[in-house]
Image (cartoon, rainbow, N blue to C red; front, top):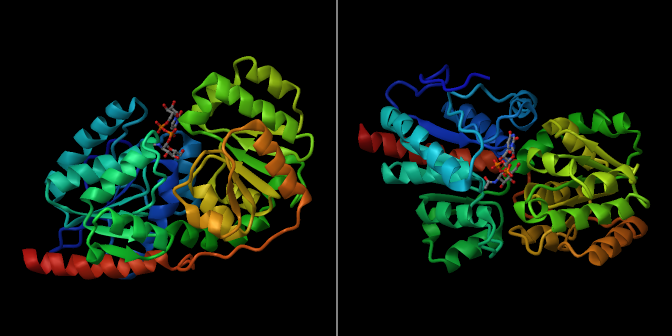
Length: 387
Ligand code: UD1
């Protein structure tokens, strides 16, 4: 993929209009921007895609562009890794001149990663309208970087596109005027429904010698779980016990990768033959893998939602969730990181009956088209006002 492109590419602004910029930076952003770009194009507006480069490994970025048939970004900022301050500041410094030269009418940001906040902040300070997709989610845990990103992005956004009613309530209780809040549903589920059949037909589990409905998928990348050697090693020990009852496939995030090499984790893994480690997977293979899993163990946010849409039990290895609707739906349980609690919960799922989920309203595969309707209406009004 091109890096540091300094010109407007094939999807530049429509003549006479100042354009809409949409930002993606990290893996969980790509499946959110894909349906929005498509829905906007359907209404005749081709947004300008800016990739901050927060994620840059092939498996974390390019593989998703290929799977989701995303257009090449018009701008790639090539930011890469760093401390939160470094990463956020570098994104802001690189994004500001792009907005100064393009002067778009609106910037759309998605999710809660550092790229989301950095780009929203730059746009706000240049008095450009900001639309936040996935607004209003709250874990109420400000030690999580994503919670800080969510709170600050929502505070400076003009259009708050929410996935569920609890998000509307959170925003209302923070004093956000109701006319800024738009309950549109969940764009991740748009992408999931689009690729679900293709994903299932790949039978991704076969490659790992697994049988459908008889394995667990594990993902782990939260700093609170993997950065502290004691916590991480205790978790790996739990999974080495779990794999005796149900095999586990563990696609390893780059943040987590290095930590697996160190003892005592490396030796715990050697004595756990059914804990299968692999590189991060592309979107479609991973979707296929979770769709046929008996359960998912994760500290991710998006996976809690995807398992709800797929009616797959999910045990969330955190003390809280910003996505309580997934718990209300009956698929997700927030189990924390206590070994005994995790083991008990796994056994309850493996030995218990299959339940059916109550999928939240508006998680119907049409969230992006609802967003595009509002964005295009507002965009036309804004460009007429500026003409
Ligand atoms: C980021 C998001 C998190 C999201 C996650 C999904 C923030 C604050 N966090 O966390 O909300 O759930 O993405 O993956 O924005 N690395 C690579 N290659 C890459 C990307 C990262 O090797 O392509 C390594 C680097 O060592 C880097 C570390 O992973 O320092 C962490 O990456 P970073 O983007 O800072 O945060 P994530 O943990 O990926």
